[in-house]
Amino acid sequence: MEIPVKEPERQYYFIEKTKEKVARIAEQLGRPLTFCVQTFGCQMNARDSEKLSGILREIGYEEQEDEHADFVIYNTCTVRENANLRVYGRLGYLHNLKKKNPHMMIALCGCMMQEAHVVEKLKKSYRFVDLIFGTHNIYKFAELLATRFETGEMVIDIWKDTDQIVENLPNDRKYPFKSGVNIMFGCNNFCSYCIVPYVRGRERSRNPEQIVEEIKRLVADGVVEVMLLGQNVNSYGKNLEHPITFAQLLMQIEQIEGLERIRFMTSHPKDLSDELIEVMAKSRKICPHLHLPVQSGSTKILKDMNRRYTKEQYLQLVKKIRKAVPDISLTTDIIVGFPGETEEDFQETLSLVEEVQYDSAFTFIYSKRSGTPAAAMENQVPEEVVKERFDRLLAKVQEIARRTCARFEGRTQEALAEEYNEENHLVTGRLGNNLLVHFPGEAGMIGHMIPVYLEECKGFYYLGRKAE
Ligand code: SAH
Ligand code: SF4
Ligand code: F3S
Image (cartoon, rainbow, N blue to C red; front, side, top):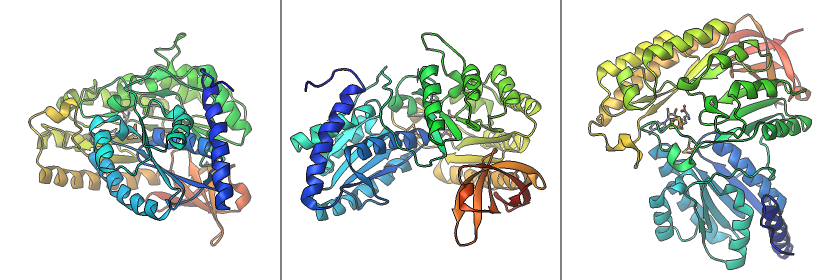
């Protein structure tokens, strides 16, 4: 058979080819081969990992909880330096495992691999790695794996960028009842601290037809909740041949019968439209939760971050959203210690947090990423100063969150039952605002929407009981 040129047919060809090889090794060993995919980083990476698992399963590998597997993939993140360090740390451990298992293969992929200095270092000092690929050619995984089996040598394939989106490859899901769905890839915003646009490439949106088709297939397979994924979902569809807005896409998804809940992330404040707020207010399926990263409360810092909104504009936006969707839960990301941040700038952040009353906030210490404009800025803030500000911010965020999270006590809300604990017979459900509730129930509830009376808030989760 000739090797197909078109995708995804080409990858299915390599899946078949590798399947035979894997079956032969399994026969020799008298046991199935196993795989383990470890994800670092964000939900985009988590979704990519499901695609890799899907392919490995198709090839004949069976999933294994930990790294004592025949095929281990680290899907890496490089958004902050500590994400990077964790990977190097774990590679030493993998090397030891590999010495004991001659059949073991190690693959590295994801955002870190898009940095030339990382690949250089791996080539030089981590020769035991079998396969290295990046974010743009992840769909070629089966083909790269086939090459590795054929040549027996380290395979490195990194692309600078791509305009391609390959549809209809296999993928796995971590949960039977909910799933992430990519709606776009890449980012064009170039916030001055952020490495994502460099490692994920330019913004590309999937066609709405293909997104809707995928969700319909997922729903037919038992999914009731989807999380639409993109670095800036609010700019979805702008570059399509027939442009549509994110709000219009949401309206199409809302029509899908059997789908109960729609979530999305992330929303960039500068692109959040009135149309989207209107659609959220009217929708029966979009969850009353918005993750709206602010990054800083200082207009001066926001300008240096290239976020393209002011503190006032952000607060105005929050007001507008709260007016349209009164019960909405707002969450955010904040960076502390961006170059040039003064105590006054930091006070602006604290006052913004106080004013918005977030349900929760992810707080990060600024991390210098090489190649970004902020890394070259001169006035980097000393580490002790940043650490001290970070602690103050965290205390404030937590104090507010404890209060805001409790505001639904005494109400009945729908929860998606996600887990059942045999020991105490408690079901863990997720509320629309993303908080968890534990209530007495049974295993059969999993994957269903259950009305739950919220008796008591225990800080960041609720105790409740099934409502009639
Ligand atoms: N596209 C999303 C964010 C993706 S990265 C958005 O624009 O909101 C997730 C979060 O990591 C960011 O919101 C930011 O708070 C944080 N982050 C990104 N780069 C960082 C850096 N260099 N140092 C510290 N935190 C960073
Ligand atoms: Fe990074 Fe900004 Fe793009 Fe988010 S919008 S991924 S913070 S550059
Ligand atoms: Fe990290 Fe890449 Fe996501 S750098 S945060 S895994 S897009």
